[in-house]
Length: 313
Ligand code: HSE
Image (cartoon, rainbow, N blue to C red; front, side, top):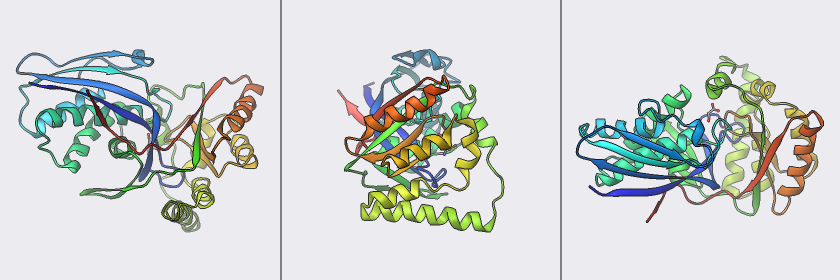
């Protein structure tokens, strides 16, 4: 039985107003995942890399294995044993799609080894099982860009339909990650605090922002994309409370020329779309704002990657 080695990117979900619907692939970091199937035996996962210590090696709790097993179950090939090695380079619990990346990597690898029998929608459904184990919720807005690259819009949940948009070019993505812990069940906590209902006026504002985002992407208008990103009227006000000095960071980023600023996925990282060459300057300003209050942070500068899952030899 053959084996496969692939890489899968970090992602930013939501992009401001597009909660659970839209996400982008980053150029780095990427996890590396190696998978083989054996005719018999137990599932086994070995994890190395920068964030290895955060990843469960119990096959029932490891999202890559859970997703891979969901593929075997769907194909009624449950007798196979999955042998997996993960090099975990995507930070965990930072809002950069770490569990979504693991989940799609596991599902993709097993499906590939077996000759790609599953349709893309089925593959994503299997990956969702891994995301559920890690985060408690079946969202697919990290899984889709990790799989396809670029920017992905979930046009329908049932049946799953994903539309890939071209990546944003001619701009940098600055990611700032405050060194705070929201909790082990970070995404669950960050979803529980969201409003269950919203006012009609809020809905109008939110749809307007999402329209700006999508039309900005279609027209490749960075200012319009940024206006959309910065205009989340529903999720950001609830989650901003979890992120120290969020509104100060946002206004300083925008004052300093960022096109747009919002929370990366469920946080606590934040991100800004900034003009090329400006990421470092704005990153320094934002991290110094946190430092004034004794909060350590890291920032990194990215491109929106064209590539999702990539096979490596
Ligand atoms: N759309 C999800 C959320 C992404 O914001 O909860 C979590 O990674």
